[in-house]
Length: 366
Figure 1 (cartoon, rainbow, N blue to C red):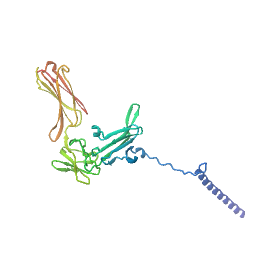
Figure 2: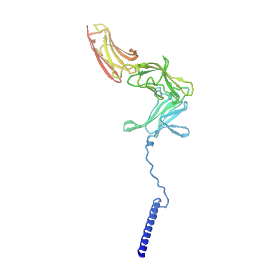
Figure 3: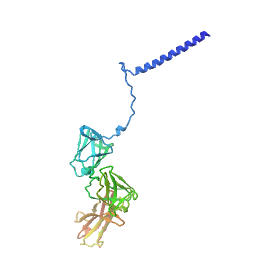
Figure 4: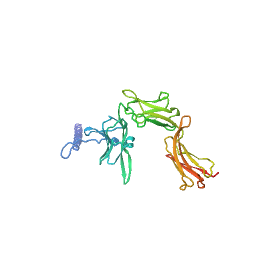
């Protein structure tokens, strides 16, 4: 019995020694894995989780003083009068900016390109320069170049001016067309994003509230009327206030449009209807359309290229009752001292941005 007990104690002691040696070996192996061949300890870093945020960050920046840069967000407020320099990274860059700066070829605006970036410089900015400034990368495959929509960056810049809460307009009385099938915008934009704006009718004097129509205000666009109706016609203006006396915007004439969008609706007729040789005849092509949509006319007629004719084109806005406004465009073809060669088919082609309509009338000898 004593011998068996001694043997058991000996076996237990051996097992304990083996476990201790293995623990020491594991620790030693770990220590060795943390050292270079030169015996220096290195720190093992866990790989950082990947993030796509950097890829989505804007490459549009503002150059500040002393070589500092500010990455622009969706909107930025700047002080008028201080020159602005914007940069966009890339070797092939295009820019967009408030339309009137390009329309009037404003010398205050300049754009320069280099191998690594493009810069837009605007000197002596004012409240009128408030608007969206954007840049994008151009990707080319040979001679085929396209805009890279994934690398397009924009910032709406407010040039805040307490003396001009509304962005000045070159037009002192603007027309806004109301249509039942689309929203209308009264474009009274502000230069201070925190300014409180309201919409007012001139006669009868009243403020238009959201209780009367689905209306929202976007400081970058103006008042958006979701479902405009004919009762919103008239002269309107916007009022805004920000830490001072309220200011009034440009006035807007709101007109309700009767004719829906589409190819021209054309009528064609001759006067007089009964014609004899030697008479003077007017052939009139009339189009009823949207107030701001231009219409072009083209004629085909007997004796074309052989007989002289006079063609006059004109248009006007008319109120067709119940407050509906329509644009009437006309082209009048006049034939003097009509001859046999002038009898036959007169064809009018009327075209707008939505399509083309062709109509025919025939002049015969009575």
